[in-house]
Image 1 (tube, rainbow, N blue to C red):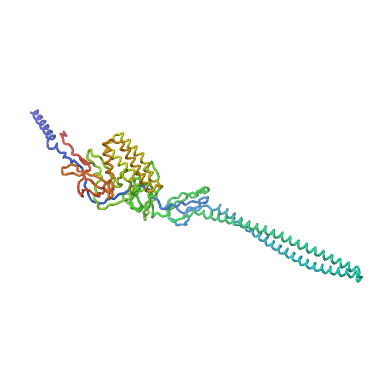
Image 2: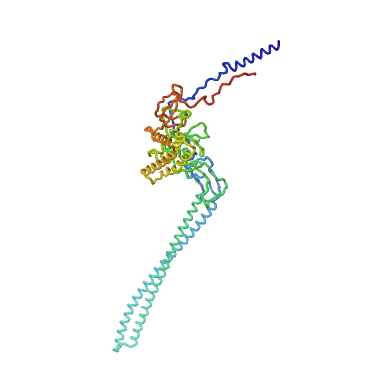
Length: 562
């Protein structure tokens, strides 16, 4: 009896398990949709260039010391608000004051020497006047003596004639002759005195000129000593370290008692940011994006210090000078912004988004729909932000910005299209890559400023024709025919609306993918503007196949013992 009950229970369990495995529960996994879709909608599309940069004050002034000495006093610290001319620190002025006292003493000594020299000049002038007076007196005496000599000579002649007639005695005649001789001696003496006075005058005049020349030398020494005094006075004033501008102390690199040596170059003591309410960001922009960054464009940015907050600014300029970092050419864009609350600090890293273009209320398609292709269909990768350009098309107004006029990225897209649509062999791909690599330097040479537009157009056409000829030589006859079609398609890539060709797939009436050709505008990385095409908002576009990623699959049901 007990065995019969056990057998009945075992048969019931086996039957229930079979029902569980083969009954309605076995079909609990619902039929999954064949396609994953997303809707066409209408909204705004904002094209932006992403970059990173560092926040800096507009002007940072280095405050140093022009003199050496020991720091005696510090009057400003980090974050101190200072005015222009405010004292930030003082150096010990003892040595400078001692030098100043010595220089002033030297100046006083030279000035005293000048006064002595001026007195000597006055003395020499007085002696010249005295010598002149002596000369004039001697000249007057000479005139008197000459008059007396003439009278004595006449008297001698008269006495001699009277003596010849015996009218006067011989003694009278001798007396008259002696008188003449005496007057002649007096005349010679007066002439000698005149010559002596003139010689003395000339000697004193020479001494005067020497004294005057020495006065000029002393004057030059005074000017030199005055310059030394002024220089030391400047050094004394420089022992007080003053802020040259109004701003905020962002760094202090000196301590109390520290010795400052300014023998070779001025040491840095403080860094003063002139105005932290207006600041700038030095952003690094890749060469592929720099063509879309222009002065006046709005910028939004964030910093790690304030997560979730967004700040705004504006592109001030893009510096023409470039630098290469790890084989990547970058340019520096200056972003200006207001910082009224001074919450953004120098040195912070900012993540920027430069708004290069904006479209409002336009028809948009998801970028995932543009990327999806049915199996066996060649991929197309239109660049909505930088329309594709055929490197073999006639030169257009965009030439000169990069190889092929549309930039190296467009040449890469063209070559990728050739590789996918022409089913190139590995050898053909390698040879075409070599041809493109050889042509790139030639395209870059078109930026030579010595070339005018006509020369640049001619040269570009020659490079493109030669590049096309070399690629055709690599292709088979069938591939050359398709190559001509691809070139023709790229020649018409640009339209009057500036868009680029694109393609999406929507579900047709039979439930199969149906291609829809589009003209595309700008993109924000997730959505792309539709310029033209048979699409209306709300239409479902295919973005993938099968179950959506992340969806939980129904758990299989089976026989459970417990």
